[in-house]
Image (cartoon, rainbow, N blue to C red; front, side, top):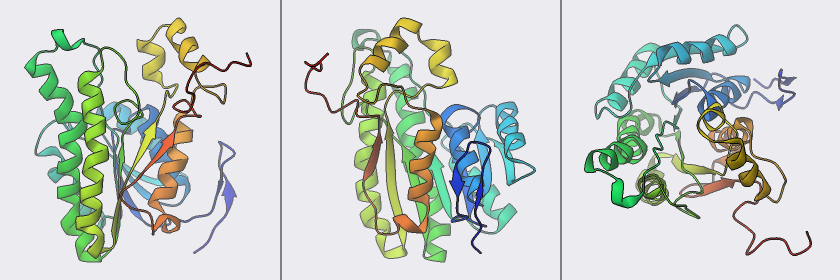
Length: 269
């Protein structure tokens, strides 16, 4: 089935994910919600998973009635959460085609002040969850000889960093390492494993937790002249989730407006 229409965000869609079952973890708001909406626009049945069920339901409300979605409450920091979430999804829809782990936490602490508990919490939510999600999804995708696993990494860690982000940086760099091994191990089952590395994306969280001065400084560092939107990231995820990306695995797409490119401040300005 090939359909084409224009969504409310003026995004031209092609129906390339019609009837695929997708799980998006951390989809209550921001980047995760945009991913859920984008996959739905392409025809996917979307399981919107979030620690905050009310936020997950808000995303479902935005998807319906034009699309099909289900809200599930899950705390991906719980070691058993991914297994339960995937089992519930397959039990409800009979299959699993796409899984996206977007949930993350990012407390600001200098290395000398990070407690073991805080370190373990950040690595647990951000990195351990990638392993557990992949492990839980593997049997179902292996059985169907196909699947797309996509993990939201960051330019922070793999490319750049800043004071106060040691644990966050370590967790995101770890995702980039993990997907390489997973891509090799899962390749014989027709499963691709990739990541997306957002730069500074103007989300509800950034607006609430960062000053306007911080936001302005980040924007000034982007060659394209603006911060990214959650939809910018969602477009990259939708591509990796589709058949168009069937020969891409073990890599990441940087979505940062060129932020990581300059060697120094532009001398022309």
